[in-house]
Structure formats: C-alpha cells, structure tokens
Length: 403
Image 1 (tube, helix red, strand yellow):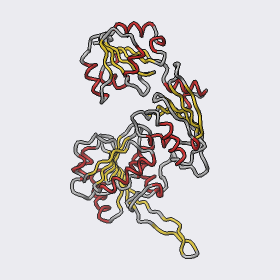
Image 2 (cartoon, helix red, strand yellow):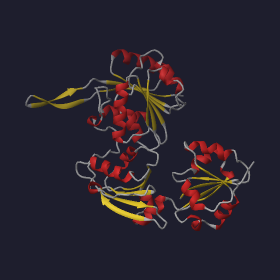
Image 3 (cartoon, helix red, strand yellow):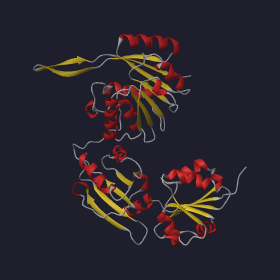
Image 4 (cartoon, one colour):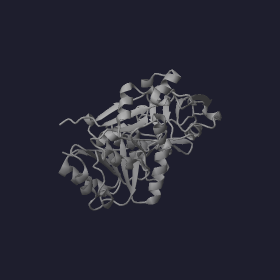
C-alpha cells in the first residue's frame, strides 16, 4: 500500500533559502523535525521545527529519522542528495513512495559548468570519506576528472600523487564554495601546486597530462609482474590475465581470493570495474600487509583483506559471485567450504602447479564438471651472450560454474 510521503530531502546550496523552490520552502517550513549538517541548518535558517545536526558517526542519524516516520520530516543535504549524497542511503531504509526530493545542481554539475566541460565525458569521483588512492585507476591520459574533496588538504594531496606518478604537468583547478558569495576558482599545475587557504567545501577539476614514463594503470588485465611487491608468491602476468578471463568479472560482483599472496588477482578483479569488490584471505600477516600496499599503489581500494586460514576464515563472509583459489585447495575442508558458499551460477577457478594438487583437480573435475586446461609459458632470457627460452612451471587450471 502506498503511503503519503512524510520525508523530504532538500538539496541546499550556498545561496541558502533564496535558492530553494517554493515547494521546497513549503516542505521545509512545514517540517516538524529538520536534520542536516551545521552549515546546512545555518543556510536554511530560520527554521520553525525541531533541528538536529548529524551525529558522529553519521549512521546514528538514521534511527532518529526513522523514529519520526509518518511525521513531516526534512533532511538537508548539499546539492543533489542522490549524487554521492545521503539520498541513496535513506532510500535503502525508506520506501521511495514515502520520500520527496528537491535537488539542487550537484557540485559536479556546477564544476563542469565553470570549466566548460561536458559532464558525461568527465569521470566524477568522490574522495569525501574515502581513500585518496581510489582515484588512481582514473588517471588516464587526456582524462577530465571532477573530484569531491574530503577537506581543504585534498587538492594538495592530489598534486603530490600526480607528481609521484609522472603526471606533474596536469592542471588542477580548485573550485571553492560554488554558487554563493564566497565562490573562488584557482588553478595551478600539479608539479608547481602552491594554492593555499583552501575552503574545506571544494571540488577539484583535473586535466590529466601524462609524461612518456607516467605510471598509468592499463585497462587490460595482466599488469606487469614488477608492479606487484612480492616474495615469489605471485600469479604471473600471463597466467593472471587468463585467470581473470576465466573468472569473468561482471560489474558489482564480489570475489573471494583464497590464498591471496601478493594480491594480484584480487587487485585486478577490482580494477576491472569501480563497483567490483574482493575479499582476500591470507594467513601470513606479512603477505597481507604487502598485498595491501600493492592494492593502494594501484588504486584497488575495494580489496578487503582478512588475515586467517581457510576454511575457518571463510565463515560468515558475504556470499561470493566468484572464487579464486590460488593456494591451499588441497587443505582439508577448503574446497568444500568454498563450493558451499558460492552462489548458484557463480564461477570457481583453481590454479595448480604441483602434481598432487593437479590430481585433486582431476577428481573434482570428474565430480563437478567444468573445464580444465594446462597453461605452459616460456619467456626469452639472456643465456650468456645470447638468448634462449626459459620455461616456467606449467599451471593446471580448473574452471567450473556452480549449478
């Protein structure tokens, strides 16, 4: 049964009440309870209803809103509440037919208008409350990036990141408090960035200019082995590319990487699509720490590393869409726990280099079907003053889809 809307979400800009539509003002003035950031409440003043600033942690504000169900309630947010805003989270808790939203132009829209950029051609990224490294996969030659800052220090940190990756010639534009009397726009190259006293409410526009030696994360799988810090426990580039192809990642899917090692497969899974996630299981803390460094270096911030031994470490994890077992499949209970957890239609890929593990895969293949292949690779290496092919250990790969 459809209920009458009781929750109004209002996007408010730097002009405050003056920038709101008559319908938004009517809802705001008729609300018995108004919640928002301190800045939002100031911009919306005067308010007749009870007011509440967002608590910390932020999620503690949701029960306060839900407790008002059925009463005229208003949530204030910046710009467009459904573009990296609170709107989507509230819509997960409250049916959409109980919500009315009055958005303002988002910071991305305002920044694109100021820069004269086509918004659909820009990469829009939020670093508010998120790791700075998540921008790394988007640092592509010629890209136009619009970035929501965490605070006034974000533009300078981005400049340092760009310089470190051979992108110092890129142009950084800092747009502060857009749409109001305090608006200010300043520009500098990343390698000579000297903009100071930046308003915490800022958006950064970046035009990427890459040097020949810039460290760009390619779009294809099979990143160079040298890009992964490792102790020898590494799925090599060519085998990794074939493994990713077998795992067949789709947007928004979750991978379990059991026996994470250097993290290369899980990292490349996350890099295939921004919404992809991976939980990596690694029993050795030093390897887990190394994999975490690799993930941050490549911008794979959606890799969640769990230190533990399978199968015990697999208990109570979210249901995976795909599983990669790069090591430990012969340990008692590991395959059974993974297979039980895998969703129907999910893919499982196991790589083996020992005869004993290969024999086990043959047994599993006879029981569950799928496909098997042996991957043999040779690389050209120097032999004295000449060159010759050096063969790597062959890899037996079993790929199966759960019925």
